[in-house]
Image 1 (tube, rainbow, N blue to C red):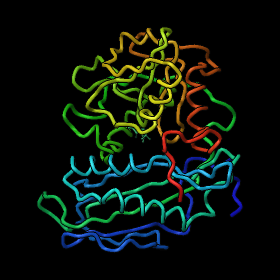
Image 2: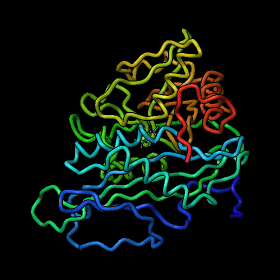
Image 3: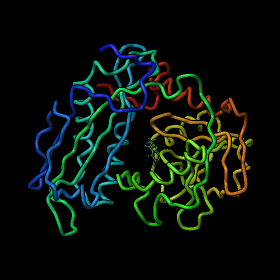
Length: 336
Ligand SMILES: Cc1ncc(COP(=O)(O)O)c(C=O)c1O
């Protein structure tokens, strides 16, 4: 496959197909590779009306020594199970989840970008309720699929810090709501605040905790991490944010680098304690944030055009493991 790997964005490109499996009559059917990217479903399917739709996101990489590896798919499998539980859905077992990921990558192996391009193959596992229901109830049938698409390097011309806006007019999730689940509705709800933030010139927005609006929750599609001058790696302890696989991995690397990892509520008023702030997630690993606008206040972190050195090191260390440049001492990579 010849694609302009280095200049690919984060968008959907047609591939050979997706791994797919249906749940009906109380059991999962066989896992199959489907080449038709269109799904046929009932007009009254539960996912269309009542939002039984959850998904995941992870990446596969071509390593220096020519292997193709997925980064911690077991974490995404267990997070999908947790999301499914919150939304009363039937989840695939971890084995089925990982087998489907492997099938989707293997059958699209020529879409895994070459080592050295900074590009990767993005995997999008999806689970939807398909039963025709008009009364509100959990679906008894589901489709689970894993589609893939090659994506370019997030930072094509360097690791550029951005400015974020604290969104106080809208919440991303309700207290005791579905903020911890990776469910479609959370993202639909974040579109308007995201758009309003962009109109004001902010590429990313930071949501406050939905209960008191006083604490940091998370960015629109990534977790919040902050580094203090005292050598701490802090991230919010909140029940309404997604448990980021990237954040958890960075916490381990941070501890290995000698940083003290602290998970605690982070008051918006206390953002001045940080010398570096970042947004972390699968897509970019870390996006450095050099300013957070909170009402009339502006908190600034480090230099405008340069990421702080601790976040830059964490970013480099995680990517080095993903591309096989450093040994995978934690057993995070699953070969396909
Ligand atoms: C709301 C939200 N928070 C955090 C993350 C980061 O999670 P992960 O590191 O598992 O990609 C994502 C992206 O998937 C997200 O959508």
